[in-house]
Image (cartoon, rainbow, N blue to C red; front, side, top):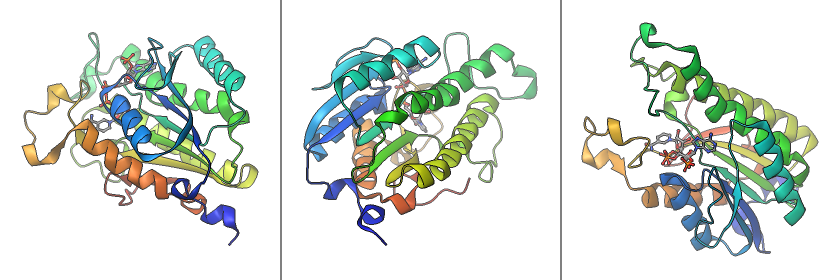
Length: 251
Ligand SMILES: NC(=O)c1ccc[n+]([C@@H]2O[C@H](COP(=O)([O-])OP(=O)(O)OC[C@H]3O[C@@H](n4cnc5c(N)ncnc54)[C@H](OP(=O)(O)O)[C@@H]3O)[C@@H](O)[C@H]2O)c1
């Protein structure tokens, strides 16, 4: 095995260039703070619809439902750095004022399916396309996407949440496919999908009442676990779907 295949972020000796998407969300803010704590940073960019600067990050606007916004965010990053060592996608959509996770087939609406797929799958993949020129593994580049265990088809025992489940399953398939392409063309890249646990955020708030308190994590606790795991990932793990303990989830 060459050095690149065994490299991990914890062992990279120079300061890292990092971008966090969905940086204004519950998990996004916590991941940004955890990255600041864990790594020596050369540059930190926090991307969100508002373009807010989160922690010490430089804010950049990004709406994942708009092609022009994705392209502009890619250009803004390319104007600032010639490579990104770590990209963390914390954006996601489960519910909105006009959208609730479907409990039954009769609740399916085209507009809600489109919204879920745009934010959870199409937008993040088009963003990967936009920043591909910045993925120059030296010695590696880690692309971490917060997915969801409910996106596992083999783990689907409860049903429900059609659009959210399907959009996360589609994200996983797209990223697994990208991991195969980049293992050939961008050796040293690592694509990883994460289940953050059940985390207390706006996204999960309407659904926490049935959960045992010991199964709910704070965003800070989840982020600490996830950053610890992603710091140790090596290129030969590319395409992995992992939970916050580092255990593999079957697709
Ligand atoms: N919380 C959990 O228990 C849990 C469990 C499993 C998986 N996840 C996943 O974890 C990730 C983070 O979720 P969270 O719990 O932190 O939820 P959250 O607090 O609601 O954050 C969601 C983030 O997604 C961003 N977003 C929504 N629509 C967007 C768009 N069109 N363009 C760009 N960004 C957009 C939001 O941006 P604004 O700030 O602009 O609204 C926000 O930053 C999601 O992928 C979610 O599916 C969460």
